[in-house]
Each structure stands twice: as C-alpha cells, then as structure tokens.
Amino acid sequence: MEVINIYQDIWQLFYLVAFIWIFTVVVLLWYGNKFIFNFLNSRISWLSFPSRRFFLQLLISCFYSLICINATYYLFKIQTSLTAPDPGQIFVLNIYGLLFMIPVLSVNFSVYFMMQWKKAHLQSDELREENLRTQLHSLRMQLDPHFLFNNLNVLSSFIEKDPKIAQHFLDKFADVYRYVLEYKKEELVPVNIELEFVDAYVYLLKKRFREQLKIEIDIPSDLSDDYYIPPLSLQMLIENALKHNKVSVQNPLLIKVYIEHGTWLTVRNTFNPRLEEGAKASKTGLENIRRRYAYLTALSLKINQDRTYFTVSLPLLEITD
Image (tube, rainbow, N blue to C red):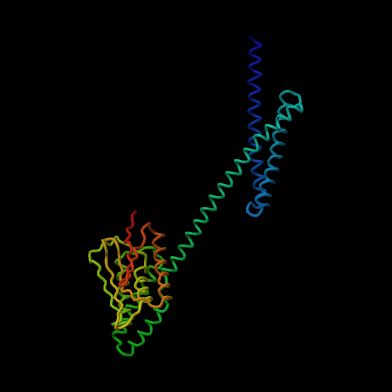
C-alpha cells in the first residue's frame, strides 16, 4: 500500500513538473516570438520583401523556439531527476518541437495576414468614401462659372435701363449664392428649401433668356417637409437642359418641374439637342447626380428620352432616425 502511495506521489510530481515546464515554454515562446516579430517589422517590411521576411522569421522563430524548448527541458530534467537528458530524448524533443512550432507559426502568419488584409480593406473603404465625399462636396459647391458672368452682364444692363428691376435681380442673385453657401456642406436638403432656391434661380434665367425659355413649376403646396434631395440636384437638371438644348424665340425651351407618383420629383424638358459633342457632355451632370444618390441610397434616377422630351425623375428621400 505504501509503495502504491509513493508511486502515485511520483506521478503527481511528474505531472506538476511537466505542467510547469509546458507553461514556462509557452510564456517564453509567446513573448520571444512577439519580440522577434516586432523587431523584424522595424527592419524588413512585409510589403517590400514578403518572401525574405517570411523565411527569415520562420527560421529565427524555429531556432529560438527549439533553444527555449531544449534549454528549459534540460534545466527541469537536471533539477528533478539529477540526470541530463540522453541524445535520444533530445532528438525526440526536437522532432516534436518542430512538429508543434510549424503549425503554430503558420496559424500566426495566417492571423497576421488576415488582420492586415482587414485593416487595408477598411483603410481602402475609408479612402474611397473620403474621396467620394470630396467629389460630392465639390459638386455641391459649384455652379456653372458662366452662370456668374452671364448674370453679372444681365445685371449690368438692367442697372442702366431699369434700376428697380436691377435691384430685384440683385436680390434674387444674392438668394442663389446665399443658398449655395448655406447648404454646400449638407448631403440632403428639404425639397421645399431647394424649390425656394430654384425659384430665385429660375427668375434669373427668365430675365436672361426672356421668351426663349419657359419654365413651369407645378409642386403641390401640401408637399411634406419630410422629403429631401441632394442640394443643387434640381438646379443641375435645369442647367443641363439649357446647356445641351437649342434655345430660340421660334423654338423656346420648355421645362416642367412636377411631382410624380407622390415620391418622385420630375424634370421634363423639350428635346432639341445641340451638336453631337454637346449631347455627349450632357451625360456628365446626370452621372454626377447619379453618384450622389448612389452614395446616399439604393434608389436611383429614372431617365427617359424620346423624340419630344427628355425626362429625369429624382427619388424623394425620407430621413429615418
């Protein structure tokens, strides 16, 4: 009975020593390989020399890990049994050490690459989004530079002929640019606010083109204040209609703005395109508006063209908390 107890005590001591040894090896391997990893990061970049970095880290980590395993085993063996490990034990220990280390290092590399890929993917998305925000910001800020100079010329002519009309023209002109300055940083504005801006914008256009341009805005007075559109999108559609269609007293450009099916803001103009070069350029403004909507919502523009009319419908958006 006493022999059995002694035998059990020996095995319990063996398991305790084995546990302490394994724990010591794990701690040394964890912090040692972490140090090696950080040290190599400061010397050899994964991006610049991926193959060199991989094999060098694999070699150094395996060499360091085998030293830790052998040194700790030797010390624990001496302290517990007072005898050094024989060559056979050392050989088996190194074989098992390599079999253990290679999968561990492979998992370590895989986790690192996955984390780096995720980080790069997030950075790419952030840069792409920031780039898109910058592009959209510039779109919101700008009116056609010709619009400024043309209206200054119109204002100059009114100052000489009719100062009262000139003053009213100047007030509307100020309303247009006040809107641009006030809402240039916004992604969405209420439709009613955009329509107030367009009213001032249309007034300037009518004073300039007179009988060559006829614009009708037919919007219900009870339109909900909860509907939004990107700022300057309605103005851009009207501007495109003027820019890419022939305008004359004999064939005036007709533009109608109205609500369709309750949730679409539609701009329809008579289709009388300029030269082929201008017709191609008309796609730029629509693409800009389409990109702005794509950034904000899954809804897209509806575009229809026939021999008589060119029609674009903007989805009215609702902001939900």
